[in-house]
Image 1 (cartoon, rainbow, N blue to C red):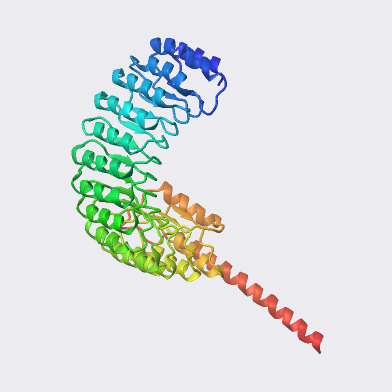
Image 2 (image 1 turned 120 degrees about the horizontal axis):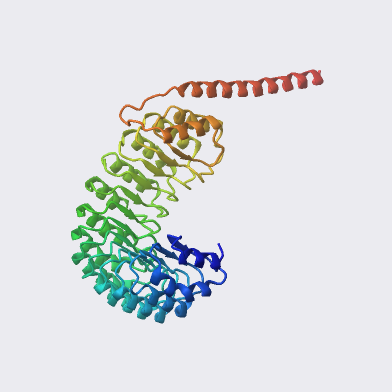
Length: 450
């Protein structure tokens, strides 16, 4: 839609959302008239303007327009070359605005000074619920101010600080905040330079915090010692339901994770991808999952599972809570695929399994056939990712499972077992035909020799 049409629709209260993303032509025209439009408009709830090179000058106009606006609840200004001055303009707006609930300033250069300014608004604002500050060039000092502000804020339930430098000092401020804050539920810290010293400060606070439900610590450089400290905290914590620990080089801390999974009863999702856990570590965690009955989703991708896939399969035969598992990129052998297939014949809780990017040598047709047969006999599995073509009847079965509500306790062999028998017959006929062809070639060769 052209800017002129958007302006016309807004003037006539016909649009619930302003969505002009990615270098929209004539964006400056819209920004100039926005204050006058929002002064009278009563329908717009969202302003979505990512990647438009709005810069500080444009942000000041938008912020002025929203200062007294009472209808807009969502503002996305990500990727707009916003710096410190723009952040200060937004700060002034937040101190006065009474309706905004979601603010995304990601991929801008607001820096530490911009973060300090926002912190002052966070202390006062009572409506903002979600704040995204990914890739904003914020240093530890900026986070000291932000987390200090969150000690007193009672409205923000989600903050994403991904790809900034929280550092050791920022981590200490975060620890103090988590001990006092009772409203924050989602905390994004991916690639935020926390490291072992930072998690040493944060872990004790996680033990006592009772509001946090989701935390992303992907790529935070925790390493084994950091993961062990965090695992000990999670044995005690009763509120966190989802945690991402991928890419933290925890090759020797599987025992700590396993002990935590045996004790913790609140965690429903854990991502352990790309951690070089290895066969021994996976075996230890799989053993713990035979006991755990609360976890619903686990990510094991890129962990050099090797022969431990047999232990994972054995776990899937006994575990009754897991609904999703990813074994992506582990070079699982044909025998490993067979083990997974046998597990799927018994398991009645798993709805999704990812076996893609397991380019093992000499996979052969038998493991594939066993896997597809198991899927056809399973009434619960809805998603299957593999590195080869899925037969139409298997795709149809997965789709049917997704459309139907099935009681996990009573789900047994289905009518689709007939399809599995047909697959066996077709496979045997195919290989018998190949054997006949080879025999014919051999007979012809003998005649020629004679």
